[in-house]
Length: 72
Image 1: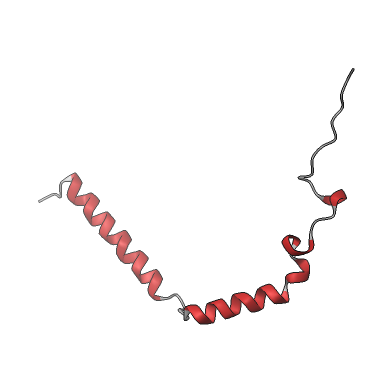
Image 2 (image 1 turned 60 degrees about the horizontal axis):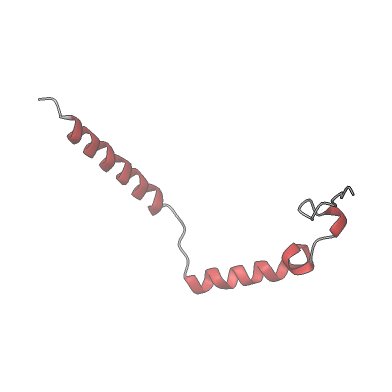
């Protein structure tokens, strides 16, 4: 017989879960310590281009405070 709507939803959810699990099995996994070491190395290699470490030139900063005009 035909599946009722809740049963169809359950089947669809199960299929989505299986597909997600299949995708996750293909991910390359590494140890947290190795990932941390890679992150530290990346940060050290790119520190000269990091605006949080080097600061932002005031003239090229699009988020700087705008000058205001006061009328008396």
